[in-house]
Image 1: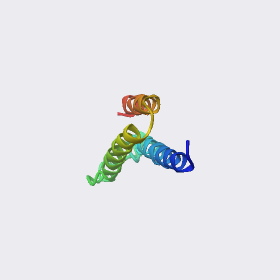
Image 2: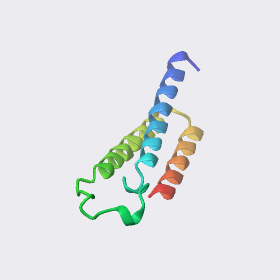
Image 3: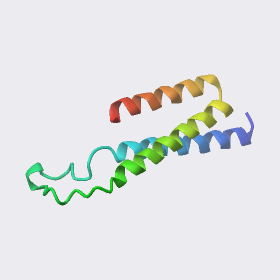
Length: 92
């Protein structure tokens, strides 16, 4: 394996793991850490910024998954696809 191939794999996996961690981090409501009785209904605005960020990370993760499919071996592609499916199943 050449240095270029290793660099491409490191870059792809770094972006991929960053997307998955961002997706997991923005799971749930931003007020989950608060006591339920202290949440006032007018605190929740309807902008849904967390949902937008999660959508963008899903799209980026799917794009990187496609790049992994093109540039890496079948074993790597299947492993990352299973990891993506597990993360989506747990944090949907």
